[in-house]
Image (cartoon, rainbow, N blue to C red; front, side):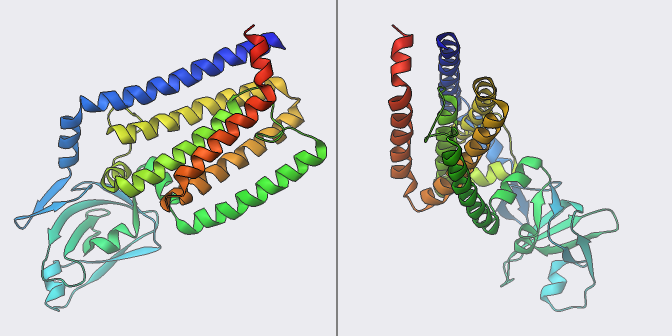
Length: 319
């Protein structure tokens, strides 16, 4: 048992050091690429009719239609404003479209920005930017993932499901005297570390949305998983994303070696439910500034609970 614990302790230390290194590198590296990032951000500026339009997308940018359909106008937008006769055409859910042109019409009281999109050479038309952006999603799996999990109704649904799952698993684990993170944990730090990393990532994510909206919006249209080519604050968030993946894999491996298969499955399901609940709770709480003190309290509780149960084991190991 001591040999296994030594192995897990050394591995946990290595993971923590790797996370710290990723975070520091992503932050420090940012100071060397501020000018490059500024040029990257400025590259999304499109010009039309002598007016500069600051957008995170431009000509030839690809979208996927997520609405049931989008109605476009074949003729020029000026003809719409002068109430001339116009023809319409539509693109449908799942169609891939590209931006052909962006134009500003200051005298349009509804939306001064018009965008021309094309599905193919025969299907090309104009529509308001507000209508476009509410009906499409960037043609990138990361952007689509962000869009899906930013949906308010989905978040509310997942909140209810996670709460029910956590309550059910805690009741089941208590009756069976089974192991569950924070309550009847096992002698490895990975599950606690994973739960804390997810909570911290949720706090950083919500903070990005509140205080660095332009950076997050640019990331939404131009996603990447490389923490070294983005601003420091976004690099820290991506470092936590990678940390979640690494720690999750380590936790699965360790739990599989410590517990019998049935108990390991129940424990991992409980851990997944706790992590999902942490993501939702800390994301929503941070939007109301409650997430910061709540995370500190949760981190103190999680660490105190773990070392209260297994602190003696660590002391004996290092004697």
